[in-house]
Length: 142
Image (tube, rainbow, N blue to C red; front, side):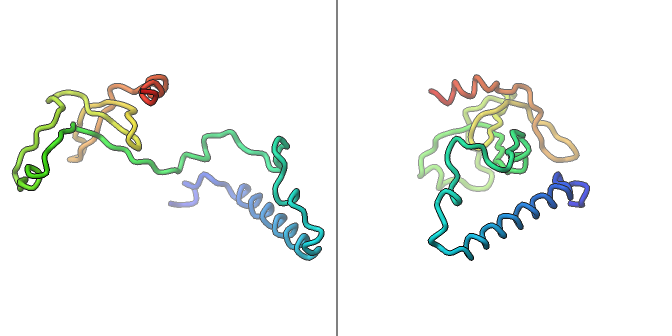
């Protein structure tokens, strides 16, 4: 990744470093004052008071969190004795039908359906139907 790909600018880094240095200086001053003068109010701010640093309501905080994306052809239940008999070339029947859209899951939660495509000798999926947030919530409540 080159420096142009970084979503954090030098100004952000400078502000973060300055904030950390200020916090370190305050902690050193409290430590030098001795344990008798330290109070929990300085360490743990009260609820309901606005924090000193402004928080962002941006989605930027979560954009780099990795998630597991899975495309599911179908499922089946199989007895262990049949599972142990599987060998190279064995065929396992799934509950999905040929030509039926495949499920796209993120961390095990259905978010879309799509069809298989081949692009540059690699498999991909073209999304044909996105599950709405209301549908996802309804499925969670079942």
